[in-house]
Image 1 (cartoon, helix red, strand yellow):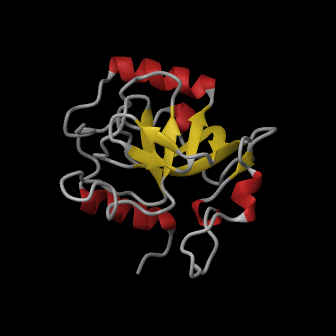
Image 2 (cartoon, rainbow, N blue to C red):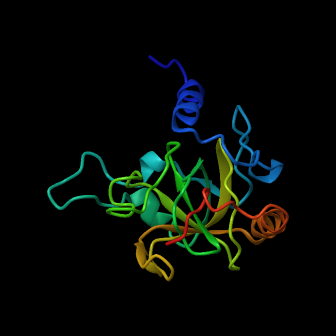
Length: 184
């Protein structure tokens, strides 16, 4: 049905209503097509490289690729999860444009298993960006608890300081609306 990932993304963004109350993607987070080479010392990590396939009898298992990148700088391309209740200084990055609800089971049924928590060093409420974004930071596989939602985050990316500063400045100029990131 869709000939390109971009066509799917446009359809999904429109059908989920993800273009409401959003900011355009800032240049520092914009995705170039074709993709530029990763900066020196940074590895590209794709969502499809996070878990082993097929899923085995013990459930989801991390790939050797992602294990080898623990503690190293990586670049990921994905979509911000809209509506995800999270702590200030944290947003969720998904391989697909999705909208999360917290009414019943939290994120259990709303986001792909490969969703990654992107963590900033400060407690800023991050505005929502529609469309693909790219982030660079240090990959962490150690579980951590999101204090506000009590969610356990098994895979996180600590955003590079330069990107975190830019996002912090933008967040101060454009605080998220309550409908964009509803907190519990």
